[in-house]
Image (cartoon, rainbow, N blue to C red; front, side):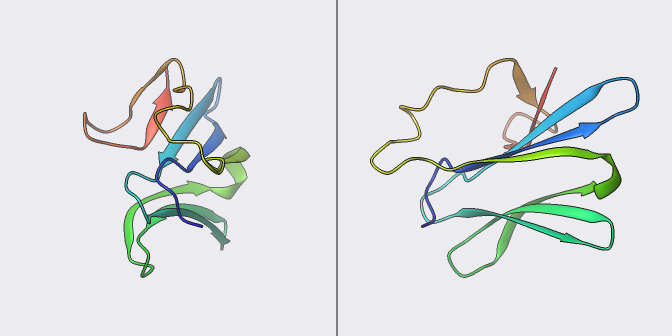
Length: 100
């Protein structure tokens, strides 16, 4: 079931440190899909009809972990604790976030 607030964290090896990125379903009916192919991992927020809204791609060789965080039944996204220590990776309205 597609629910606002579903999110996926991707942890990558960035040389001398580890970086975390997060993609969040921003509206009701949207979901997060993860796919792998030809050495690339793609995480996309898609609408009910399957139209991608936001996409992030990572080299598979650099990915350490992919963690899915579905919103639990009956739990509103506002009730879930917000991730700590994060800032937007590419602008104030972005939902792809990276840890500092």
